[in-house]
Length: 143
Image 1 (cartoon, rainbow, N blue to C red):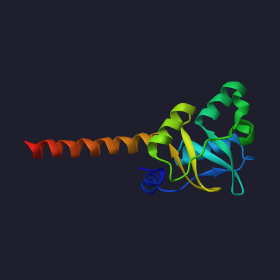
Image 2: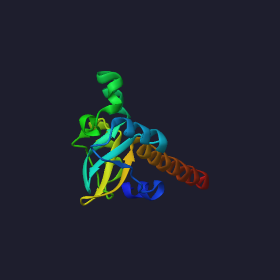
Image 3: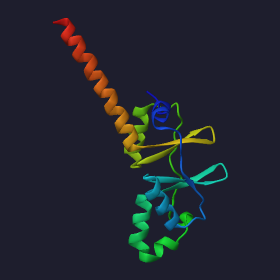
Image 4: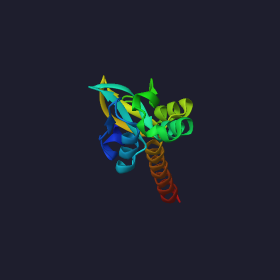
């Protein structure tokens, strides 16, 4: 199974934000869209990621001033990205190894989606359930 199969199911909508936007705007978008991360872009270039994790860290460091900071001041830079052709297992391993919860999906240099650890785990659980059902059917037909 590939990341593309996850994107087909969940959709390819990615909410992006400019690096010059305020952290307050980023937090408002996260809440309004009920998502955990925004991809920071300039034109078509992916510059980084801002997630709940970066906002909580900034709140701890800067207090009430956090809302007026710019996204580029707290965003995660050098984000790990994956292609739609990557296997779900490989991406799960990358997320675990690098301790990241979100990965932008790029086809070449073009942003075509984003996957979260929740998306990957949900997909893996569905695969395991399917395997269990197939094995159960084989067992029952062999009796």
